[in-house]
Amino acid sequence: MLSIVIAVTLVAFAWSWHAALYRGEGVLQMPTVSLSDYKRYAITLLDGATFMSFLRTRKDFTPEDIAFVRSQMPTGEGASRWIRPAFAFTKGDVKDLPELLKLENQVVGADIQVDGRNPELAHKLANAVGEYLGDAIVRGRILDLVGSNLNNTRTLLGKLENEALQNQFLLTQQQQRLADMRAISRRYPEAARENPRQVVSLENGGERYFSPITQIVGLESYIAEINETVRKLDRDRETLESDLAFYTLARDRIDKATLGREKLALLETALVDAFRNRDTARDAVRESNNTVKLNVGQIRYLANDGLRFIAPPVVRDPSYGRVLAITAAAAVAGALLAALVSLALAWGESLRTTQRGT
Image (tube, rainbow, N blue to C red; front, side):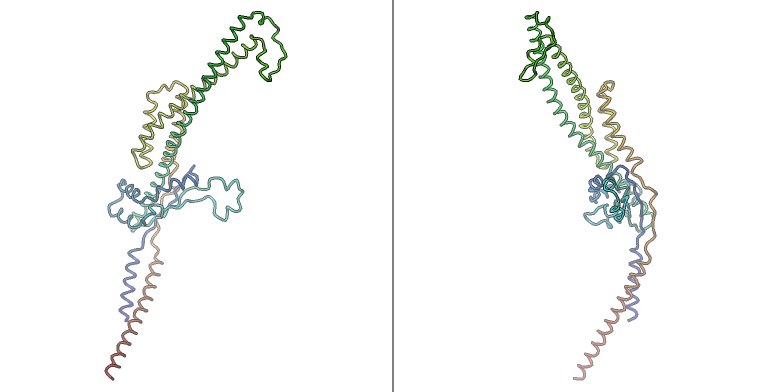
């Protein structure tokens, strides 16, 4: 029976030793990324197939490494099983904080913990998961920038067009009224010599009883204000049309890529191409160009410098205590199995003895 205990113990020890994995750990900082944004961007982490495709683009992963990673990835979880958001405050801290601080961004990064069959794989997998998370955030920021601004720009252009039509109609009406008042003034020249200071009620159209010359001055002032509004609307239209040209081109370009950093490169080429043939000497176009450059530059900063490990990922040795615990449990199970076998043999021998006696 001792042989059963020894065999079970050895098998359990060999299995647990072979299954013991090295752990790669690191913290990726995520400046300017709110918790709500993180939750939206992290949805892509659930797609395991995309993560495996990402690993294939890296030269440091062999087919055997990729097969191992796939075996460690449960269906439906993807890379998200190795990533947890890191908060600035613990649960105990939150109850003692003022309400204003609770509303501020509490996400400072992401804790990354992966397992590998050797130290090298654990280290490079932690790096890859961190880079993939950063890529997902960059991708989300680009889609937010292009998608929301494309829709908003189209909406604003439509509203601006209606406002411009209204002001143009108002301008035409007031210009016609000015021409009419000048004609009236010519027909009644003596009205121009009257004292312009009058006491007139403005209720129920009382302003119509001002002298023609007084109404002409007021109309010219009002027309000047309308012309100022029309000029501003024309400038705003030029800015929005420049924005729309960029975001339309950007949407076509970024749809050709899957990874965030690939989309960012295409976004930057769209920025150059969209403004290449536009007159950037005009302040409306220059304002549009500067705003787009600022937004794209912020994403580039996030990709290059913002999303990085606070310190290089570290690798921890396997838990040998777990190996010993599994081995000890197997030894106990083996002893129980040996006892059961002994009881079964003894019962069988007793049964045979009884049969021979009868």
